[in-house]
Length: 97
Image (cartoon, rainbow, N blue to C red; front, top):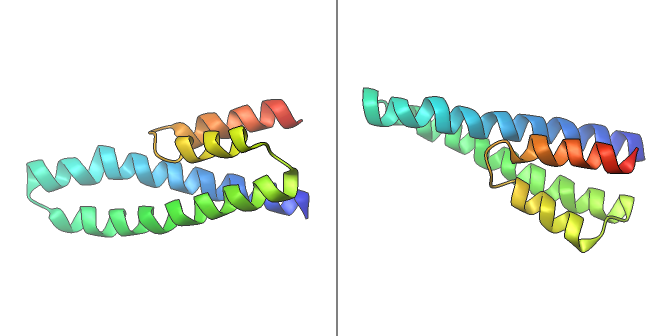
């Protein structure tokens, strides 16, 4: 169960991080510089769903892996920063292996 949980949490984190970068680096410029607001609607909706899944996955991982509240808060903070999920994933792998 632990390997399955970590594997899925990492996959969701990667997808959420990439979707956030796509939203910031591609969809937002297309909206404001090319007049294509639909891109933000599509990518933003996808990112929002992935963000909810990431936060839920962090919560499940905290309970299953006995993470501290500080680690949980670090995961939540990482979810709102560009590149945050990638940095948090590296930190978790370095401290839990």
